[in-house]
Length: 266
Ligand SMILES: C[S@@+](CC[C@H](N)C(=O)[O-])C[C@H]1O[C@@H](n2cnc3c(N)ncnc32)[C@H](O)[C@@H]1O
Image 1 (cartoon, rainbow, N blue to C red):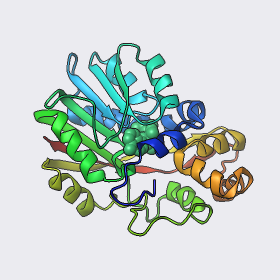
Image 2: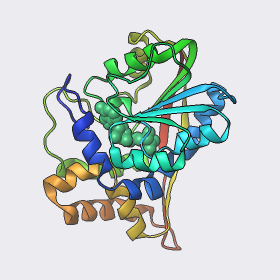
Image 3: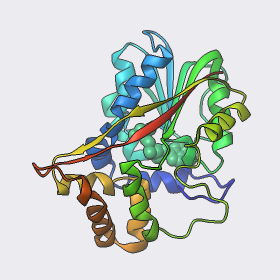
Image 4: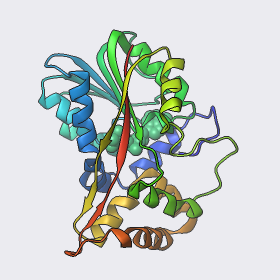
């Protein structure tokens, strides 16, 4: 979210991302399921491992990990999303908190992920430094962010909201600030992580009809901010307009999206 650099964002982002938590969990979160699966494959998430998802949202990734026998922990700012995560992963150690100040001991985890989360911290560098602090030496860490926006269909939906958002504070990073491979590698290296590889995962978005698409797209914290600034009608209209080229003959929508993952060793 467009925070002033250095400002902590958990309180504001927790409210925004929690406003339509059920729609996020039911519609939007699953658009990244292929990315969670690819990340776990790359990291080798095994039974009994201590796993942390930093910025866990409604907990789909934790639920998959718990299903594989991992000992799961999560942290997020949004109480409403965490309520869903706790239903899904009753055995999880799940905290409401700030990415820049993780409520976990040093060197506690075998595997750490941040799926589209670190970039929302006021200082993504501090947040990733925290992820490294709580990872065991040699543990696998995955940072997921948007793929390169050029030519990506889903990036057109992101762009549609731009005119409806408040002007970002000077120096605020945009949603694609970490998407270039050099920027992502530099981000990880600065946090003291050893980069192993960077890989892209195609994760197309499907919606059965326009009302479902609009509910899903309205549920992000970014959309909540645009609604507060410009109203729900304007946000729906912008999304409907951006969705139109992606309507399929059966009335459903299919939008190509790619996410970029950096796999590193702590
Ligand atoms: C794009 S969502 C991703 C959620 C989840 N990882 C997923 O894939 O569905 C970003 C998440 O980051 C959380 N978040 C944003 N800023 C935060 C902060 N400063 N501290 C903790 N969580 C934060 C939001 O509450 C939200 O759940």
